Amino acid sequence: MTYKDKHIKLFSLNSNLELAQKISECAGIPLSKIESKQFSDGEIQINIEESVRGYDIFIVQSTSYPVNTHLWELLIMIDACKRASANTVNIVMPYYGYARQDRTASPREPITAKLVANMLTTAGADRILTLDLHAVQVQGFFDIAADNLYTVPLFAEYYQSQGLVGDDVVVVAPKNSGIKRARSLADHLESPLAIVDYIDDDQKRENGYIIGDVKNKNVILIDDILNTGKTFSSAAVIAKDAGAMDVYAVASHGLFTPGAANRLNAAPISEVLVTDSVKTETPKPDAIKYLSAAPLLAHAIIRIHENKPVSPLFQYNKTTD
Image 1 (tube, rainbow, N blue to C red):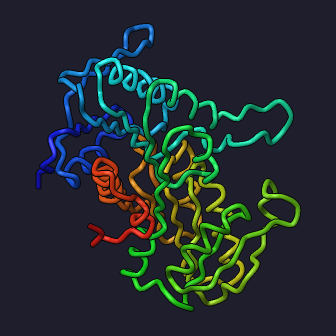
Image 2 (image 1 turned 120 degrees about the vertical axis):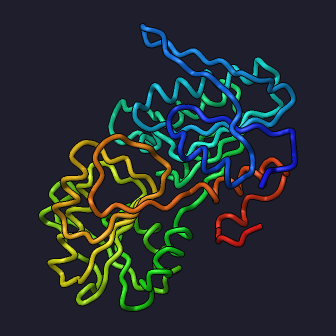
């Protein structure tokens, strides 16, 4: 299917070309031509190889590893589009790096999530579309429109298709900060909720315990970012010690920093489920499974371009028009 409106162009930078290609197929919008290269000293040069004058431009770029390279590539691309008289420049950022630095947690710390928002706005972005911000208040850091789509409905559809629903399943937040996300998935699956808590603090993971009943239940651990794998690995052991049967882990963004795959392979986890928001070259756990966020993002791009509300996608399903 080819999208009929000719006043939109979709570009992909280098962070996640595979996802951009899937979005292109789902939306029916071909990827436009661009060259991005680095000089020997590391400087980035962008060359847009076709006219963007008067077009609504959508640029797919996650700020994942190498974070700063991908961020600067995006900023330069925004500037190039604005100088070439694009009508609007819309950023499709499946993973928003620096979102974890959303507050001053200790004296003299920066709020880097706000700094990045300012940089994108100053460069000339008109809108940002992202998935599962680490903290939803980061939306408020933008002085432009910012749409934060949720992946929980996608995960719920998957687990429903696997029969992981009802009272035989317990959705577990592996840390206190993830309770809201866990409750949302539990509501979708009509399952009870539990929480992993720690006697002292979450740095002493051997002191963890379950608030809730997981004995003889299948457990789904849910978080937004899977980085080192420590949180899931520890929570899986704690759940097993509390009598859980099979343990599943799900996260919106699979960063898989070095060592994560080994930790997850050693943990009692039957499956690790993530979206394709981030492309990484590091090893993945043996039990990895990917769900594509491309259909959700493609629907959002079309809705934004057609000035339709994005809110129906917050309860996304495959039949959304």
